[in-house]
Length: 609
Ligand SMILES: Nc1ncnc2c1ncn2[C@@H]1O[C@H](COP(=O)(O)OP(=O)(O)OP(=O)(O)O)[C@@H](O)[C@H]1O
Ligand SMILES: [Mg+2]
Image 1 (tube, helix red, strand yellow):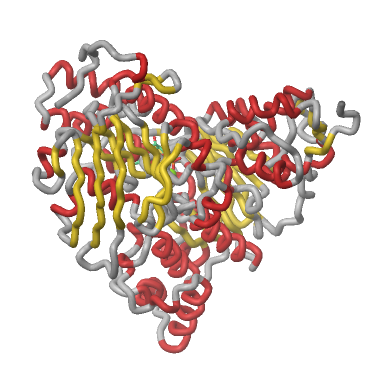
Image 2 (cartoon, rainbow, N blue to C red):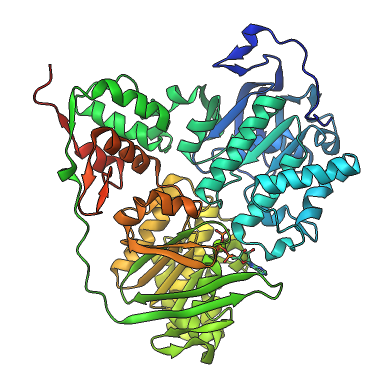
């Protein structure tokens, strides 16, 4: 059944509202004693799960890598066990239908799913056909289809790209398209499994706000799996914490995220404002509560104002300009027009010096990937040129460039071709004619550096996602390039997985490599990069040290970025306390980067009553 916007609602009892929102206590989804084992998994991946999800509820699911989150989602649409087989115990019903007894196509009429990897979901020849496809399948009338397509594409900021082929979209645009296709269905149940990992931060906010509206107004039940604690805290009614196949706890976000021990035990990072208040509590302050959203953090701050002082002098000063080496890569007025006419770069000039660690950020479609593909000579500039150590790259073979500039692409799985881990690392070297002891030595060294030596005989695709990313890095390292480029390396990783990958980039940087990282995860950047390049619509909007870049809120907003939650909270405190920052030359600024830095600015007020 498709819920139409005009669907009349019956009278609603007052008790059906919680926190001012409509709550219907009929469960839409019932999970009873669910245990499951894939045909090849060594043990149960879900263990005795019991959970009822009410109609109109917005449920978040969190948990470390391998907790069973995706498997739980697949158990809702019948793919587990109907497609995979395996051992299934217990019962799952969705909209009254048992997911084992009813065929997948029937269950699909009640729910839409969006998975993390959009490449596996896009099937049509154009953006608009992709959205139309599902609607035609459930026989939505023609003019209604047109309306829904327009609405869904606008919601995800893809209007104007209707005729584009999905393969010609940027990574984040592909993810937006799978979300649009699901939203257009306006299903009873919407299941989103890390759907926004490649979206620019403001785009993510907008998409989730729309989903929240659909949830409130149409009563769509939403299940959102995400590693982004701030996002979960902001949008969901309840959070289910899954670990090791078990449902550890289900509660409202403010209670789940205040459980410091539980979170540590299961490798979950609390929202940054919660970490800040927990740190204050550990230092003997008494915050009225442990807030999890920005709004709550601001409210909790008010009663504390008479008890504390904020000392802006405790903010570390900008690291002094390091003496970097000569320019290794230089983009000079680079423009790029794709064959379909898309102007992806409109005159980009950028110098990267030996030994730098640089981060490139910016909205989806800004041209980040397009730019670094020029550094690798994977794309030819329409105008302008790129120099590698002073040589024009267009005079160099791609394989020559690859020996000096390594690349880990946005979706590393597309870079894996071989049947064992070892063969994958050896592959590019063999292509260069390297053999014998030198080959063995280089492969060994790369496997050891990336902690993959024990997996050398494994099939690459049987490695968990985090390890596959490390494999692609290992293969790149074996080439011994001087410059390393990572395109969104932390996508799909949980917090600690993301940290592990960035730690590797830091180690390599400390060993003398020049590192360029593209990312949407701004909160992960402090501690790694000093220089931030902000791109928007094919140009560089800002090239600045990280403290300055993170505190340019308006400029970031113009390219759909938002500073990390804790930086936004520091901006709030700076306004409340009328603090200014001479180093940034800004009023109302407290240029911290992390919650630890903010906490270090807080001292007890001496003259407190
Ligand atoms: N093969 C292609 N053919 C035509 N247009 C393309 C192609 N690849 C990318 N584009 C377009 O070029 C623009 C820049 O894309 P690019 O992939 O460089 O963006 P990005 O900044 O890396 O975005 P994201 O954050 O989503 O990865 C986008 O508008 C995109 O639609
Ligand atoms: Mg990209």
